[in-house]
Image 1 (cartoon, rainbow, N blue to C red):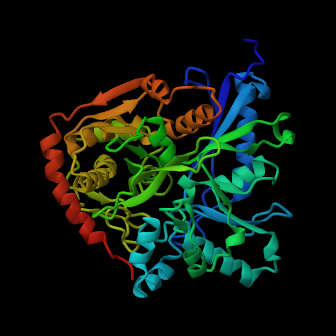
Image 2 (cartoon, helix red, strand yellow):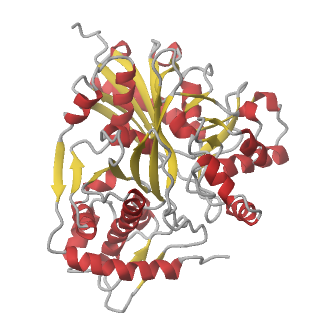
Image 3 (tube, rainbow, N blue to C red):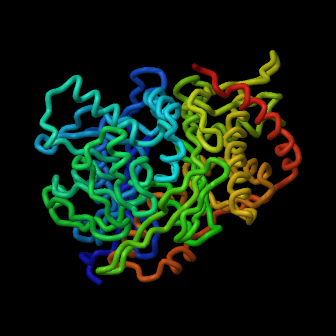
Length: 504
């Protein structure tokens, strides 16, 4: 092969706290990557926004930088896979290409009052039956409703020129030079506007949330060609052949493509996802039913794969808050050594409800709390309590999955930045009482997007081979701390009860 052969897949991973481009070689290994942290805007308590223009500029920068760092030409990229933070959404003008307002981030709680109103009006069951989702401000529908109202009040726009979408749709539109306005089933299933059975926009819900159907993107299969990059960007047209929500991309990377297989990603939030096959599984424990990904053989209708998900809003974000908000630490990495410096948590328990509580509580009015603080408590014990809380909330969701499936989980596969923390992973194994398997590549979201994009164009021909060739870094077995960790879980749940329904 000449050096000009397309020997790489580029994954674009647009996360909550940063945007990155990663090159994967034919062996499925990382060849190079470029990352830039994303500015977080908090205009009011409980509100979180991103600047969509910054996301696009950073994405553009990351693509150029990763090619330069790897010293390869753009024509050596066979395809691009896109994976994104989900539920975050925006409106923009297709004539100017400019956003009409900042994007409203998935963590944002400003639409909680609208959710409460709809709950009082008796729409909870109908929304769940249609979408598989719990009525909550987390999802895009109420955010888009808020944005539309805001634009109508503050701007004079021609609604024929307005486009709506989640971050994948915005990125795709920009990557293709404004030619393609589309999303995939995995991201669409997080909007609270998708009919889960048919995989199409639900006209009743669009109407209920006051969202004109014509501003919504076209839904395509997760694996397949969405369009090609505008040649002005990199000098060549590169096919974009996969789009996946970040959690579904990680599920794909782990090889979780059949019932009973699951993973937990520890990013800004923690997300435990279990594949349920071609059937929609319904939870008795407030887990979400969602689309894992969709595929279609040429000329055939899409095949939808489903999943159950437990979404925990605050995981890595707690550690970021210790660093940026409380300034108790200087780097996330030092939390491991600090937690190991003390024998236990000193009776301190942390409730990670910095953006309310997700699964299995779904309490928008809960707030974060430290409980059990006495005069003797040290900084290290508070840091340890935060790490323990991340593992405790994952245990709650594992228990819910076990109850829903009837087949207890034997191993937890993990990924995401916080997995670097050996204390957290060991504690997770201890509190669950099962092994925790950590792969060598923790960027499973990007890896999943790359695998999907490469498989879609025949760059790789076997999904099973790709997955089985992934290297495992370490397996954490339950150890001497398991008995105490599991006993403390009961106390932590008591702390959670105290923090629930905190604000009116």
